[in-house]
Amino acid sequence: MKQRAVVLMSGGIDSATAAAVARDEGYELHALTFRYGQRHAREVESAKRLAAALDAKQHLIVDLDLRQIGGSALTDQIPVPKGRGLEEIGTGIPVTYVPARNTIFLAYALAWAEVLGSEDIFLGVNALDYSGYPDCRPEYISAFERMANLATKAGVEGRSALTIHTPLIHLTKAQIIQRGVALGVDFALTWSCYDPTPDRQPCRACDSCILRQKGFAEAGFPDPVFS
Ligand SMILES: [Zn+2]
Image (cartoon, rainbow, N blue to C red; front, side, top):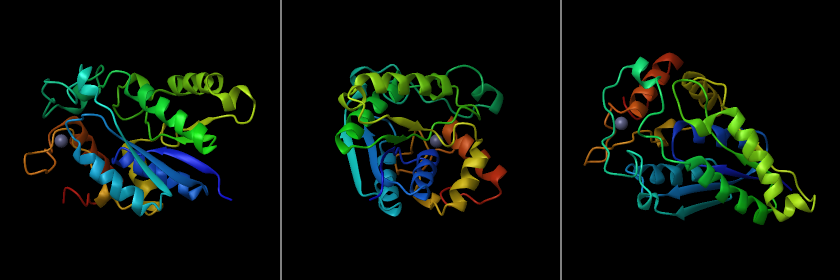
């Protein structure tokens, strides 16, 4: 029987590629997506299509409303920055940072993994290429993993040892795209834009759109969404 993996699936390039890595390593995918009140809830539609395309055994979409907490341009009445240069994007933690988002998401993933009898969580975080998010760093991931093994019945009883897989953490966006293409990811299904237009098109000017365009240009592939 295949080992089960819980795969965090946002609908973007990174989570699609991380899921493809998990599938390539022989895991049975249990995809997990959050409808958290994000400005770009359009990404949840992409996550559904990606989970199906990647043969996920199950796709769980959890509703939680982080707008009640706010504090981010993605969940609050704060404008999404537009047209920033690469140097500016690479400086500091942007207002699109959602407070403690990966900790919240990984807590759900941990709970689901325990119920599924899974010892493996895949997360498409990436510490390079201007991410600037504190909860994408390797030291954060290893601290969460240590905590996870103290936090669960399965861990305490010694029945399982959880591993958080971050196969993209040291890759650039261009390298992630190349890896995804090699693994057969259909990037036409992905969504990156933080601030879609009223007719649900990418804005082409937010940090995420800019980094996506740069990534495809450097990877040497046309972007099936933007072209
Ligand atoms: Zn955008």
